[in-house]
Length: 185
Image (cartoon, rainbow, N blue to C red; front, side):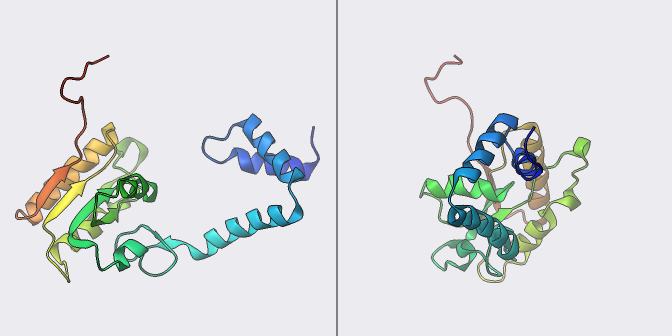
């Protein structure tokens, strides 16, 4: 129906999460209407992010240097680690402006049915980081995995491993549930 380059753009845009066929078509036509400078800026941004962004050598968050900005920040509490599933999970916690510790990004959640085992995640690196903390001993690990079946299983697995390796480290979980005085409705 469309010229091959347009159809290819629609197909590639449709591969993005949350983008269906109709939205991919709207985005493709937006790119076609955009100035050559704007279209090239988008293409350059995609190329740059694929070339420059890698995982932080400490916490496995996204970084454009060996260490991410959070791990480089000396004002952050190195004795407090918040464990999240994906790099995108750091953003909502940072938006609260309440958490002043550091992070550890697992790269997913345990899901044996999907073939995701402990060795597929950065769990061993977390254990090593907690046991062999070079700067400041780790006092607390906050498990901020998603409140799903896989997230809960991951949190339980990590908590058991941490209690076994470092019983003096406090392991906590984000609160969830109904607020006091709340209804089920």
